[in-house]
Length: 115
Image (cartoon, rainbow, N blue to C red; front, side, top):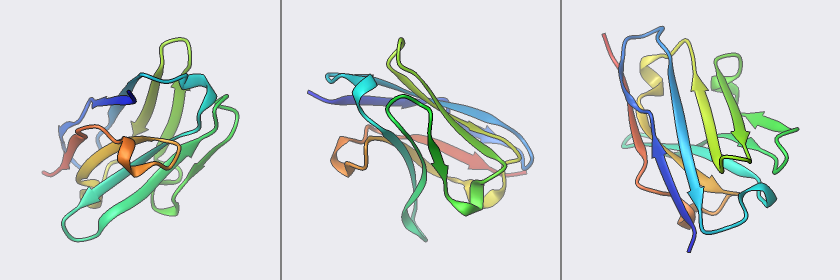
């Protein structure tokens, strides 16, 4: 059974940073690309970032380029998302996905950016 557990969210002021983690189990993590998406009541789901299985290629949506970094540690079966220079518009629930499979997401982790 695919299981993804997101963590690391919290309340942060604009300009602050957070590091999100996604712990994976139930599949061969190193064989799959992984993604981060986020959800807000206003915009629904938004794709944020994607990384290849080996971690040698990654993609970010334009609104987070230069501020967010996606990475992974295949030895630890863990995916990361470093969030820097946070803006109020980044407030959302963040989920990780196996590939782009929406059904694989976990419970999510809440990121709230507010002064």
